[in-house]
Each structure stands twice: as C-alpha cells, then as structure tokens.
Image (tube, rainbow, N blue to C red; front, side, top):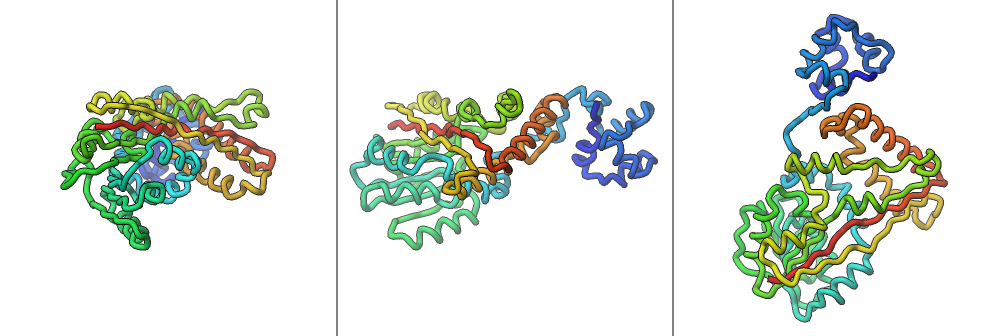
Length: 361
C-alpha cells in the first residue's frame, strides 16, 4: 500500500517540515511515510486526511484524487506560453515536408494569388510553410492573442517579400473586416471549448466558394501506431491505454483527443460542403544507433520527456480519475521507456495522426 501523502502535501504547497509540525512529528517521520519505510499510526489517518481536505479513502489511494478540479483552459495563452519551446521542436513531427508540398500543390491546387487567414496563428508557422507553395501575390494574415507570438511573426515576415497582417485578438471576439480565399487552423479546434463558435467565425471570414483547411490529430490513431522494442524485452509490456485519460479531459471540457476524425462532422454541421479528408503519411523511427538520425532522435526525446502526462507523474493521472495502482503502472511505463530510450540499441515507431480536412463554403 502507498499512501498519497507526498502527492497531497505537494498539491497543498507544504514542505515536509510544515506537515510534520501540523502532525506533531519530526520531518524525518514524514519522509519515512512518503518513502514507504514506515506508515502513520491508524489514529493519525483521520488527522492527515483532514489536513489535506480529502477523505481517508483518497489518502489511502482507494478513490481517485482530484488535486485541482478546475479544467485546463487550452484556449488561453498561459498554457501555450509554457509549451512554446516544445511546440517549435514538435512541428517537425506534424508531417513530411514532401507530403505537405504534394497536398498544397496537387490536392488544393490553388490557381491564383490566395489570401490566407490563420486562426490561432502563433508565430506564423503555417504562413511560413504555406506561402512558398502558393501562387505569386498570395498574402498571409493571422489572428493571435499572444502579443509576443505576434511580435515574432512580424519579425519573420518583415524579412520576406510576402504581404502580411496580424491581429492581436481573441478568436471568439473576431469580426472580419474583409473575407479571405483560404481559412486555415492547425491544432485549434481540438483545444477550444466551443469549436462550433470558432467555425462560425471562420465562415464569416471566408469568401463564397473559398476553402477552409483544418489540421488536427486523433490521439487514438497515434496510440495504435506506436511500438517500441521495450515491449519485447519486458515480456509484453505495451504502451498503456490512454483513452481513459483523454476521455476525462474531454468530459472536463479541456480538449478533444479525436478531433481530427470528427472534423468532417463539425464542418457538415456548420454548413460547409465538398468535405474531404486526408491524413499525414509521416512515421517516425527513433533509432539512436543511427548517427544520421541524431538530430531527429534528440528532438524526439525532448518532445517525449516534456509531455504533460510524462512530467505530471502519479498525481497527474490520479487527478484524471486513475486508481493509484493504475497511475503507478503508467508512470512505471514512462520511466522504463525513458531508460530504454537512453540505450543505444533502442528503437521505437511513432505514427502521426494528423488529419487534413478541407471543404468549401
């Protein structure tokens, strides 16, 4: 049995000394409780539970711990500012560059200069990869709430010949002054609390007959497309099923893990027509023994180690409805995977689950 003393103490922002003073024991005693060397006396359990504001069942790991019941607001700037460096590295794993060129030139096949509007543009990544593939005279505009991201985008595009314009505004408050030929969004609808409202804003921004292009993921596809040699070496240890975690996020109004596959339905409901979809062809092979892939391997490790769930530990999963036993199993998998990735003979396969869904108005 493992009591959740450390997780609850840290969630309260307490030190071991502060908890020890409240319990009238030494901080060494608290340390032994947290490291399963000794257990509190049965008479101390109710007092510990009262200190943390939980039931004894939660303290004993018999019921899920919800450290913070407030949902994460993925459509606000604060979260993404914390992830900015990781996202810049992660972008290379969205899709293969040759596939993206093929998609724009052979599938979308723009025939004339195209005015592009990017919802939630960040530092203008989509504009950077799109404009070189569009006919001469095309322009790029972006809506973004984070002024630092807009500043970075402006600095980049000021060094290019492309016409550009950026609006520092919340996408829900957006009122277009003109209409655009192509409206795009990358990993946006899966992270907003009201995708229907955002799609309505996109409709208002699009010229009649214009094209909307939405790119988003299906985490289940990526989960099904993952394999590492650890599975063989650990006697069948497979990647855990993360659907319960994602379902909990969805129920809390945080993000939609299957949004990529749902996009055609959302577009149909919003009144778009000629709805079509493709999926990225990228499969990442992590193989540190191959020196030619060192840069990609280092980036893959960096992104993997900075996943929310990976960094959150046991408390992250307990907060999303996992039992203590299940949370420990998942974090053990993460640790063993991290150790395995450190070895020169490791190998892993990761499939991209990015959907390209496009339609006309």
